[in-house]
Length: 289
Image (cartoon, rainbow, N blue to C red; front, side):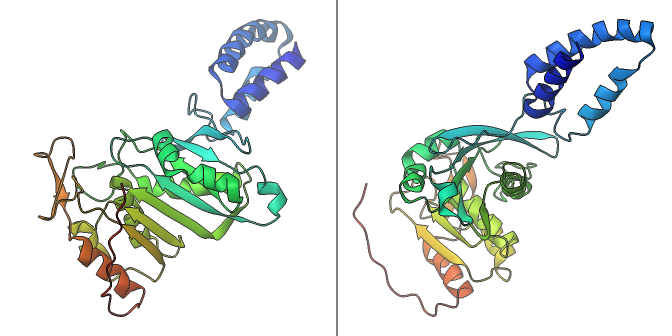
């Protein structure tokens, strides 16, 4: 009986599964009968053990399992909110013998981590090169709080991303290089990448932004806070969300205003100045779909 209880306790403590909880609750009832007879308050000790785990009350929220060469899903409780992510670790990550860069991929608004992983092909590249680990966080309600008042407001996504990196290093024991954390994102995810670069420029090594130019809020907030870092921007001349007029709209319902942006040229100039690159005066179109 005692041995079986210990197994169940381990299952609950490590994996925090509903099955483990059901079995533990059932057995605890049986054990309480024995307590009345034997006078042993062992169940109190079980509760204290479970409470030592800070994530134990995040029902059903458990870390990703590391399956080298395959994507796995995990959950992390941040400030009382269950936050989800996809993780990809290349097969040869242990053979490399050194800490690897971490690439954080942020999906666009109304998208999801699995979709972003599929079309970005970052996991494929990670497996092929064994040069980095990739993680794809999930925004609350499929959006990121990039600083606009009407998109993801009230959600602390910056805290989530920082906690996620700590989680990968501390809990999953992944060899993440501390000074080689990169963030890439598209649209809403691209704005989120710029927000992190603005607020925590010493924490990340670089950003890659697709289909997003700085919002006016970010521009005002970050004008004097940016530090030199690697930055790549990819824009399209037929973007249906970031309009030439300076408006940001819902690409599906274009009458729905989502904010205002400063435009492609000013966004690039802002980062050119931050990186002390001198005058930017070159432009080369790329014909691509």
